[in-house]
Image (cartoon, rainbow, N blue to C red; front, side, top):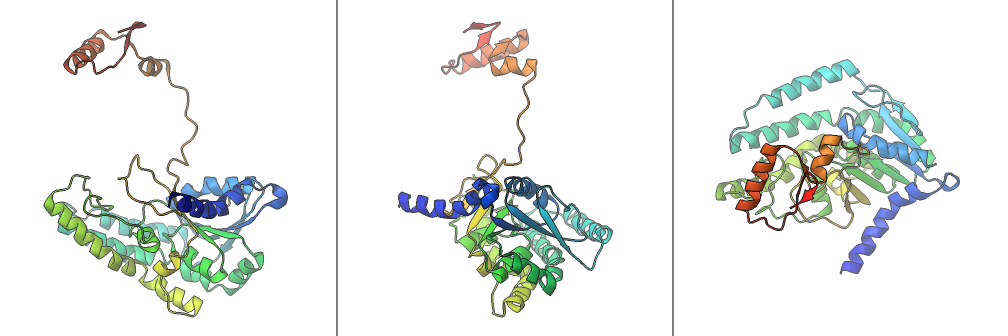
Length: 330
């Protein structure tokens, strides 16, 4: 079983590794359809590195956006949209102000706010979808490129639909999704009896009431995904000329790059094609200042700090801890 899982993981991971490792003479063709805001800033370092290594990377973005623009070592294609950056920022600010000022002090209030969030995001995530997918000239240009793979953020359904339309392997890169699209599409097990769902504010030690609310929330989430992608499902069915849904299309993803790790998330099962890449944006750490180095190497100079630490060690029976006072090991 372990060998089979490793084999499947290696096969899917090879799609991305091949793009990373091939030289300029054998570079692959990668289509990138990012999301706006932090979705793009989280993906941008990987996209630029793939382009720097000799791959032909084409990034498709709307003419008006909050944070997206040309990036290094890539080709940028734009398409017109029926809004401006100013109007988009203003409308989004109003929606976020409403959600941020909503009372979430009770479980029922949090459930209601969660549903209102799905309604707001169902409109927000579609603002570029139709403008791109119904642009026949752009879609034909993308088809002519004959891409090897697609890199997109599944929060924005336009990338999911475009990948299915162009019939190319899709790699999804995401952080925290508003509804569990990744869980539903991959059929990843998620034991709600001890795993708090996102945005519930519960710990891993839930009371009976919290476990009950967690269960009810898990039963609501498939409906929430349907509400979030209600318009995207219609567009996908029209573009692909068959009845389908975003969840169904996302289930065909070759690889899920998940931008978190278990240092900040509760441990949970993962499917073989789900790879955690948390911390990818973290830069190279700077050298510690001199004062911090003293703590790192166990040097203690403050008499008050020495007193408290010595008292702590005596209370805990030392517990096999070695420390140094003025360079003398105790």
